[in-house]
Length: 317
Image: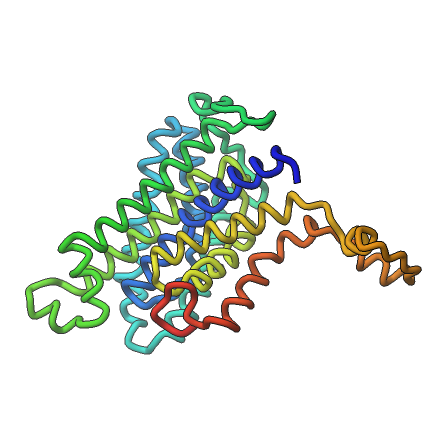
């Protein structure tokens, strides 16, 4: 493995891993503070990208960066107040079914408003340049900006939840709601704020990723499963677990993409020359890079088998 490949794996695993954290942090917050597994989380991610596109086309990216997550957060908060709160008393299965339906409602609404084809949501000119070049590989300023915001989000969330009175109230609202109410805090309002803030974080991820991966109606369906892999591997409700899980998945998937190595190559290195049937040979010629998309799910199975609560979780999956 060359030095250039090692540099590629190191930087891209961090960039991709922190993007996964930014995408999953909102869902981690919602589940950790409310116990709600929001199946529609990726839809709010998509909604953030589309709203950012619309605002960007009317004003500029920086206004979209502020208004789009705020809009998505308000939509999320209103959803919790007028719908999810009424369903909460029927248990987690009812909540999951509700968010499952919400996923498709948002997807259909997006297609009705913006159409079924990708929209032209582009990286702002002020960040569309190469910031640094290492070993012949260029890293755009926009990628570094996304990385900076991802780190800032983690530090801010950790500080609020672990070090402040607000974080204590939020966590206690899930485990001891009656005691929190007795102290004069409005627990339902706290849950609305938490759900809205979590959806706003998903919207922020959409704003920052939509102009890179493409803003289209299928983006929620494509990225939705990986969000759940991140929070399950890290541990349901664990912010630290989500960070470690994101970086771990980013590392393994980036490394897999970098390796053009197959079972045939391994046999050749070991000195074996086997005359294989065509079907078997097609299987053994599959490279590791071709298997990269399934790496997170293999990691998910491995973690569930060996540690059902995830790396840092306090609940069984």
